[in-house]
Amino acid sequence: MSEFIIFDHVNFAYSLPAGAKIPALNDISFTINKGEYVSVIGANGSGKTTAAKLMNGLIHPDSGRVLVNGIDTRIHASSRDIFRQVGLIFQNPHDQIVASQVEEDTAFGPENLALPRAEISARVEEGLRLSGATHLRQRQTYLLSAGETQRIALAGVLALHPECLIFDETTAMLDPRSRREILSLIIDLHNKGYTIVHITHDLDETLLAERILVFQEGQLVMDDLPRSVYQDRSRLQALGLDIPHLLQFARDLQPYFANLQSFYRTPQVFLTDLAGSGSEQKNSLPAATRSFTHDGVIMFQHVSHMYLQGTPLAQPALQDVSFTIFQGVATGLVGHTGSGKSTVLQHMNGLLRPQQGRVAVTGFDLTQPTLDVRALRRQVGLVFQNPEAQFFERYVGDEIAYAARTLGYQGKLRALVQHAMQLVGLDFEQFVDRPLQSLSGGQKRRVALASYLVVQPHILLLDEPFVGLDPQAHQQLSHFVQQLKSDGITIILSTHSMHDLLEITDQVLVLRERHLVFNGGIAQLFNALKLKEWDLEIPLEVMIANAMRQNGIPVPYDCLRWKTMLTWLHDYEEGGHVIL
Image 1: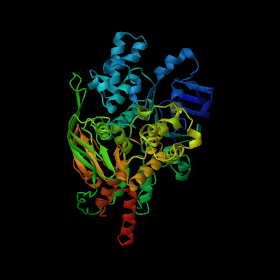
Image 2 (image 1 turned 90 degrees about the vertical axis):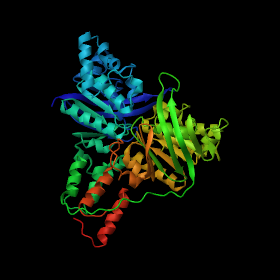
Image 3 (image 1 turned 120 degrees about the vertical axis):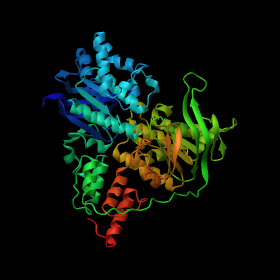
Image 4 (image 1 turned 60 degrees about the vertical axis):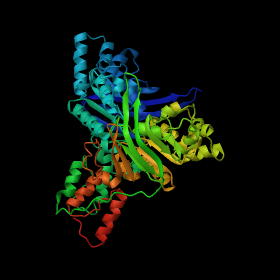
């Protein structure tokens, strides 16, 4: 393979308005060859996105060199050629959509290259075909789902005929079906000869790569094959990382199943090995529908909502939705992108009012024009999917204190801010005076959560809270949310992650095309027959339980969380049962 991207002792720091600098990369050197598939991982703020921007010339090194196909990115006259050769697809695809119609947006790049009209048309057609978006060509870009928008952003990049594609957390905000489709598309593009650089916090995705780069605090600390990188779990944990769920599950089960390996690239091979020794299937009855005896704190009664009501652009968001959420119960809210999840959450804290039907929250009737919204929001905190959408201040400490100053608080504000930052894993001295714009996406998400913890709400609405977090921060925040649940806080978690849904929630609401199609316990959800129809996926833990049942091991249907399953398996073996 020939060398394509070369980092030669690269240093880079971000400049703050006051003149101070925040180091981002420190003496980085590596090479990516043409046609390689490389994953890039590291904790929040480790320098991954900075490296991506350096790769396609959006920013230039303070010292050292970045070469793209032999061209130094610091040469201004070569910028256009570098942009053409290295395409960057952002985590938020809306950041790179420039036109209102899909076909026009895809044509934007080739038009800026001053290509002939026939060539532009051919490239638009090719970009849409390769990204699987031909059927969207006449659609308005602002009416697309998240998965569709990712495809359009990719189509615009592909129309430039790049040799290398950089995906920066591209799947993070996608529903399960869209995530599978984008990952399949990435693999297909790699098979067609494209060089792939895939930045991700989902470590299971990195098993698809040929090589992994690991960053820590601006330094490259590992560069090796996936099998080698994931050999030493303790070292990875010291870096704020871990091993993929697939490898964790395989290694946890090795003491019980001698034929299992310690490394797998795909769940399919692992599950085949697990069920391969095959014995008689023993059926268990699904667990009974869970009965919640707590008091109802949120009630929706026949709620419908339409955006831009009364205009030609009217768009239905919810249709005849009814449910009850109980005090102290963690409730999951799932469904494909555009199904109405965020609309439901915004009705719960009064950002939206019912156009039809009734919403009651902790005694507040949201249909009443005299509703005390400030009092409601002291009890109900909403952390948005995009944390920047709720920032009002410039610095971290001021932002975390903002909601408390606005809505009221109990105690000394500085101490409350410090405690909230500690809870979400932000060092007070290091971050309190940091500008918000200097934070990584995961750090901004922690600030957004801390800003409502200061207010001490009774109900916490979390809209995709784990997106953008590195594996260790994800685990810490997940444990923290579970602790809030144990403390009696009512949690409503909107998520695309079936693993998080399984670990945290008890009750689940599934939205499909603006309708509520499921309301029940977590065990019933994953025994439902319509998961594929609802664009959901079965978590690997549940597939493992099914494979063990295929081996004659009668894992209870409500024994789904991984630690619970391992405990049951241990007790089953200790009880004298033979496990293959």
